Structures are given as structure tokens and as C-alpha cells.
Image: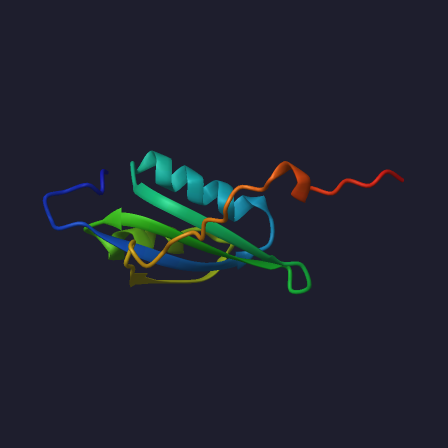
Length: 108
């Protein structure tokens, strides 16, 4: 089941809430690789106090609902939704490289 078809593909960001731990991440990676889903980027935030984590993954597809339903099959996921994303607005700030004298190292 390949999600690359002749429809117009767009970028979608999926917001996933899950139980803490590696299991939901491994299942997500398994789904992405088995289904040949064209993912662009993903981020992970962990909340140790609530034993939960939030995952945001950007996927290029023409069938966002099918991918949403695949993610819903993962038992550890407690919530998931998606929005159309604009890849141009999602930039990573670039800092100038550090000079050698900017790095301070102190001995104990």
C-alpha cells in the first residue's frame, strides 16, 4: 500500500500524543517504512511528570486521512490530528558559527 499517488500531494503536520517510551515511536517508524510514506521531519517532546510525549511529524501525501487512520491503530497513542503545513514557514534558525575564543572550558 503506497501512499504516493497521482493526486496533488501536500505537506501535513500530524500532532500525536502518546504514552511515554520508545514503543509508540518504534511503531510509527515501522508504519512509515512499511507503507513507504514520504516524511519530511519529526520532533519529540517528553513530559516525564505525566508519563507522556508529543510527537509532531511532517508528511508529504495526497491522502492525509488514510495516514491519520494508520496512526490511530497504534495502541499507545492517546490522540492524533493533522493540519496542512507550509514548509516555507517552518525554518530552523541559523546561528553564525562560533569563534574558537568563544568556547570556554574550565577544569575542575
